Image (cartoon, rainbow, N blue to C red; front, side, top):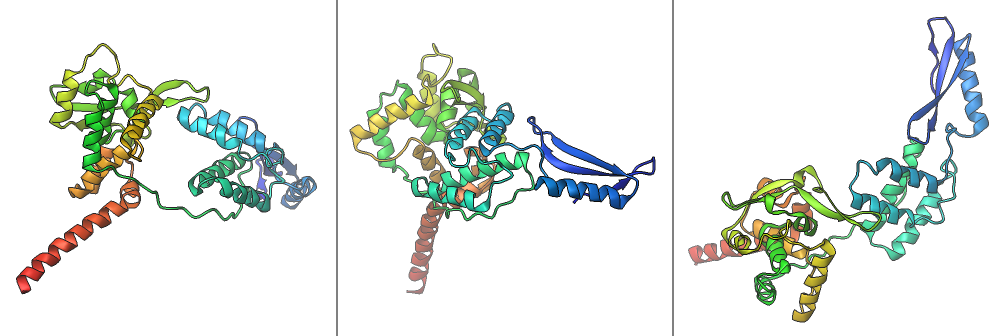
Length: 341
């Protein structure tokens, strides 16, 4: 319970936190009395009578809805779209008042989601739910058991598969260019779709990655800033990519005039024809594996890939590093065997 403070008039006042209003602003209720004990007693009596220290009461569904509305102006359109999808994953909780929400209810919801969705999706859904609830009831703190994270299963194309892909794709097609940019400089699909010719400097052989194409809640493709500040980067291109870009027509503002879904569509169609089984994003993994195989320092690899930390390199690509370590171990042992034989 909040403590009383003495006012200049000599009276005592307690400011009792009672939640947030519809705009997310903190609300307080004042209790003033002649003595400190009386002011604190009035505040305690009020809180006890209400059964909660939160006067602004809304349902979980309304909390999620308002949370999304308040975050729409500052978060990526794709993130907001994912929030709307997650909101519909908690139908049994939507009508529950946030002051009556219990650990058991949240745990049951998480357990039910875990039957259908991946651990990552469930953990993201729980994170969104609790962020929305705590925006209006910050004192809520549930200890919920979440599904264990599973290591990402990454399928990395071989050099032979990549060459087969390029041979099968017409070298003047947008898909060919998209494959080169993903495997040759590690660009994300959304970054490739947003590139314009102004981003390419043929004299300096550089490419400025500064935006991405994402889908909004209304399923419209829009151009926004990159995923994170680290994703905005200037890349020095290898000659083979510059040579390719220099031969392309400049009659379209964008270098690859395809929306992200179109890149995936044509890429999947080509994969099926060739009998390969991996994703377009795995071309980016191919590029990352090259950086690690070459022994590129983490800091530089992070800058090239557009990562904010080395967690992705250390965790997602750990199997690549193990393979490289095994290769180095074998080379060392071979040299030692030769020396001591």
